[in-house]
Amino acid sequence: MHTPQHPHEPDSSQPSAMDTVRLRRLNRWQAEELREDLADLYVESSATPSGEEFHSRQEFLHRLAHDVQQPGFDMLVAEAETLAGCAYGVPVARDGSWWQGFDGPLPQNLEQLTASGHVFAITETLIHPHGHARGLARRLQERLLADHQASLGVTLVDPSHGAARAAFEAWGWQEVGQVHRDLPGPTVLRALVLPLGQRTADHPDGLAHNDRTQRSE
Image (cartoon, rainbow, N blue to C red; front, side, top):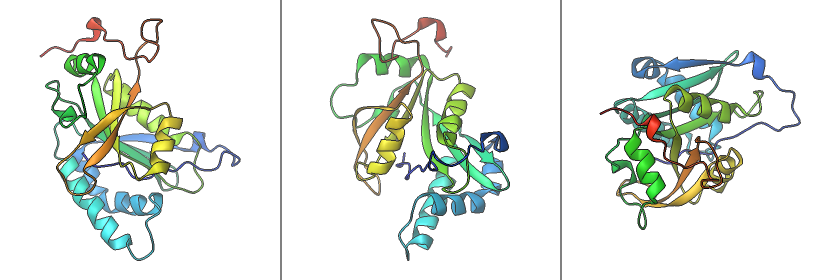
């Protein structure tokens, strides 16, 4: 699992163009066919420093090639005249392996939700920085999670990417701890969750486990 890059939303003072943007679901083969366009979107949306575009682009293509091979990979793209954004990810295995390296004991409600089979990890969110509707990133994320009947969205963010973390928190994501990963790049990542369950007096954070949504084996 790698860190989502800097999600970018246009200035709210710009006119909304939400009605001109359409969402389309891609399988792994369609995503691979669109890989060059997605890499262009990545470079444009992540504010890559001048001179590092090629290296950054190749790293993204390498990660994408890995991600599309993961079980349950799913992608949504937003299109206007050109590619406006995308979000993709994979279902989290019920065995809890996604949480490996979590700093400290995993909260019981997260453990229960993971075991229920209704947790989906969003690996990447990319939004073109110019001329598209405010709120598109959240629209993509929520639609992707809804398509998988997820009760919880999860993602990992590099602590040095303050803009990315602020954007996710503005969209309703909550930090729940740190995860240590033995992978190239940052070794300590911030774990964020987007609760989609009903908020009650006992569970104001929306992280209640619901046995009625238990997935079958």
